[in-house]
Amino acid sequence: MVTFDDINTGDFLPVLSTEKISRTTLALYAGASGDENPIHIDIDFAKSAGMDDVFAHGMLSMAYLGRLLTNWVDQRSIKKIDVRFTAITPLYAQVICTGVVQKKDVIDGQEIIEVLVEAKDSNSDEIKISGVATINLSENRSN
Amino acid sequence: MLDTNDIGKVFDPTTASVERGRLSRFAKSIGENNSIYLDDAAAKKAGYDDLPVPPTFLFCLKMDVPKPFENYESLGVSLQKLLHANQTFEYYNTAVAGDVLTFSSFVEDIYAKKGGALEFLIEKTKVVNQKGVHIADLVTTLVIRN
Image (cartoon, rainbow over the protein chains, first blue to last red):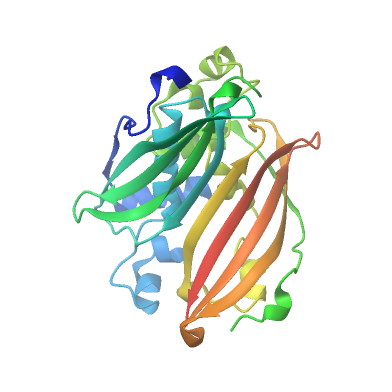
């Protein structure tokens, strides 16, 4: 795990790339997450909603962003994750998650890092999710 | 159409048990390979009482009810038109397997854009565990494409 002194503004987090999203990925995520909205698993329903096909849960890509962060810092130091879903992630997307440190400050004695996070589809290079994670490295072990 | 009179509406609280098997299935479904989320011994070694609930799984536990979209449908939202626009998690403590979490939600805001072509619903949820410890706050922004 990284320490506050190791980190500089502009640093990139180790990139996380996923397997291509298949119908199986979505079926497994629907079951495991409990998000059974048929728009992600039933092509007939998706078509009735005017879509060409099912598409990935936004929260699946956000879970990948969660992995990006917890591969880098202890989960207990993550104070906030705030994201916007900017586009639908289609089937067969390979999601590439990136993070870059945009702020590093000591506030009230707390070591605060802000990371700009993004999830892109490697097929289209389009940004699907973007947002900011706030990390307090003084609370690495608080539970 | 949504009704701005529903701003402030409080939904019935729901509870969900954090089951270890469920956490394992979720970890598998998102391709997790960090042993802290997969292996009890690794989690304990890292100082957790049990397998930790990963950052976004609280959203899933919130939907762990027989009819997860019922609250939205009660406001007049149709699933065909619904998209998730924003999601915020603010964390206070980490939940672990064995916890029983209570989710208390209310409608924080409702507004329209583009002359009503897009409607926005903002729901805020407070999550506490069985000991009353504040785990997190969730803010979900949904967009309804009319």
